[in-house]
Amino acid sequence: MDQAPNRQFLDDITGALNWWREAGVEFDFLDEPRQWIVPEDEQDENGDRLPPRRRPPADVDAPPPRPTRIDPALLPADLPAFRDWWMSESLLDDGGPAGRVMPGGVAGAKLMVVVETPEQQDRDELLTGQQGKLLDAMLAAFGTRREDIYLASALPRHDALPDWRAAESRGVGEALARHVNLVAPQRLIVLGGNVLSLLGHESPQRAAVLRQFHHEGLTTPLLGGWGLAALLQQPRAKASFWNAWLEWTKSEIAQMKDAGPEGSQS
Image 1 (tube, rainbow, N blue to C red):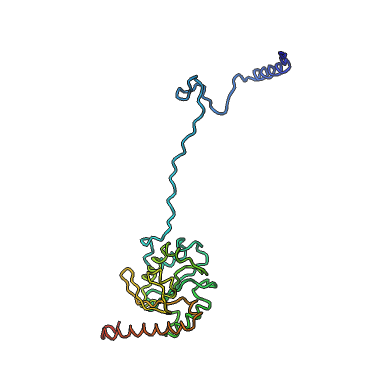
Image 2: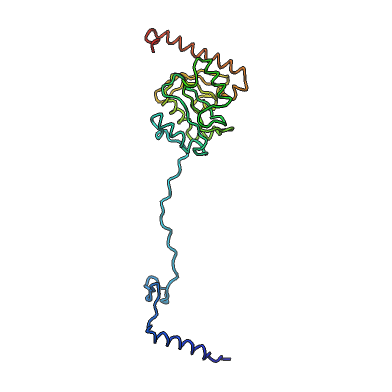
């Protein structure tokens, strides 16, 4: 059944259009331009516009991959720059710069001591707790003091359970070797079997083992031993380490005597 047209609606539309004509509006405008003629390459077989095609994604240069290992070629070449690098380099661990402890001492020290990590309470300097007290007692027995040595740690912050394999894979061993090379001490003590491993030595089976450190043309007498935490728990190990120290220094004195007057003056 056909429905009669709505005369009232048509009259309203006609009245509205007449009102706009009387107001002087004769054309319909769009804010956005419209393409009335469809280009041939956008027509289908019937001449109708083809549906829009997806544009291929724009070629965006992917960011370079983040390095996962310290590049020895990029390590600082002087000690002050290395110490600044030590406090900020993200590849040393995953914790950022907060909580890191600066090594202390001057280049050319007679003795450099490397420990595993700072102690938990360390803030502005290394070894301010029980391990530090033990180290100070050892240094006093050696006839020196902390102010006269260069003290460093293999890792930049305290870690109760360090992941030493991850540290090795990051290249922390190369960084430590460069650190020793820049300090260029006369003698080197490394406390901690894991630290010795970073430098390419096997962990000590005894409390102390005599070795040598070789890196970038530098050869330094090295006394490797258990970490300070282990020495605190093993009183007998302290005596073993003391005997190793005496053997170490005695051999150096003998070498100086064998070298004659020139060696004794060096």
